[in-house]
Length: 139
Image 1 (cartoon, one colour):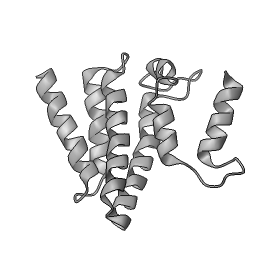
Image 2 (cartoon, rainbow, N blue to C red):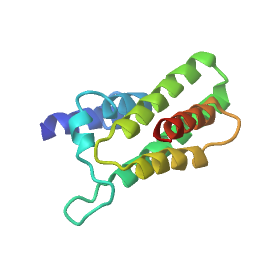
Image 3 (cartoon, rainbow, N blue to C red):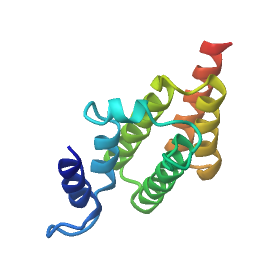
């Protein structure tokens, strides 16, 4: 399993012979069914034995989402925005569906993404609407 994972990561981050990193592929893989059982067991805070925490993972995702935002600002292409918004929606679904995160941690994860985005993009609107819906759901 680990060998398969490493091969997939090498392909997605550009260590293969194909070329550059695939941010969309990485997000799809991370939020997909294959990785879901592993994402569900990631703890909120890091420990000595398990240094990967959900907080740290969310920081990695925040940089990818900032990259998506820069792509939107550079291209202004509507089809690109849909792809990037879909990737963000998948991550929001991963956050809200995580079984080991408290409601506060889920909201904080979305808030951190919201705070790193610029004001004039569809990604910020998307995360804001998700936060409002989340708060409405959890009263």
